[in-house]
Length: 608
Image (cartoon, rainbow, N blue to C red):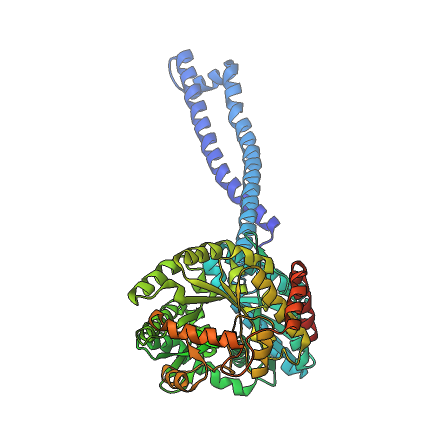
């Protein structure tokens, strides 16, 4: 049984006092010896000899010896008292220091325990504590026959933010995300950071699966407000996977694994969140296998390029093609880019993949050039690739290796990619533009950037997103957005390409709106090089020829312009009403940016 503080103090006092008394007794003995010597000396000087009689005589006749005889007793008493006081004070001091050390040790133990179970950056529970709380919640749910849910969350594009703005700002972003998550969770819920940009939420008591889905929607809404870092406003989105006990598993390992599978599917489908479904399981090992095979695929040329032509609207001439990468997988046949591009971005393979695409696209351009065709190639750039300071030098080397003119290469970039780091993007884009490389804004109208920012960018063209073009004949609001965007781009000196041109009627509508070029199923879907050769021979669309053959091409173009017809029979000249309508829109061009932004927001809210 542990001793109390009072008992410890009493024992320490006795121990210290006993040790002090021992030495006090030694002093008293020494004092008596000194008295005997002094008395003997006095007797000898008085009687000339040391005898009992002379000793008694010396004692009785010498008062100093009496005082000396009393001193050992006085000092012995005083020494006992002082030793007791000193022993008590020393013991009390030791007790105080021991208590302080114990308190510090306890605090250190508690801090060590906290560090073991909490994330050092966000102070949220870590994987260890989250799993422990999940186990406890499972026991309680089994006992009460209740439901619980776990949500696995991963930030989209976090690697690009980390690589672009640095790990310090990446950590700041994670702290802000953690604060928002804590702000929307109830006290009974647990928010944990499992590592990197991966978070987990434990909902220990839910009634229905839709309750967990509602929490996921709240998280998505909480992340909608831009995050401020280094003067930038970053739009950060997350992918969330949901697993529910007991529907999706009865133990912690199974639930965590299935929530992770659902999270990956949400990231792949870009749906924000997904509730686990057994059919998703086949994708998890598939994804892990692909991650290991992608590097080999790049190195061994298992990738192929398909090309989708772009045609000028007034002449029907094929001016360039967009190069779209595919993976000719030995087991999974031809894989589309959305199946492996996210893997390349997450594993750091996006740069070698971009180099592969640039090399093969420009190589094909050179082959076409030797055949007398002047067809440019367009390549999509990811955020990670665009913000690489080595990109201009890399492209210069690739252009030189294929003896290609810079203006026959188009780099397509998205609005959101530019907004990740505007200053750095502007610096790199300016270098590319100075080299002669053409730049295009892809998926225009779907981002959150200001249209006025276009005036600062050295871009040559914009591509209206297909979501506005495909149904513009049925959706008048989308038609108004397309018209306004075309007019605004032309006022800024930019060319306009309409993606998603899927029908002859849409092509005609684009012509009436004075759009410059079109791309879509109506002209051609993405096709292989071999299919392109056959399509070129059979199609009514004419590829642009090199300088040596431009004379005959120019004659055909002039003839078409004079007759006002295109090979497909549509008029190349706008009707008077269309011209008047365009002129009217031009007078209001300053208000178009605000109008488009407001209209686009309404459409998103209404789901239109």
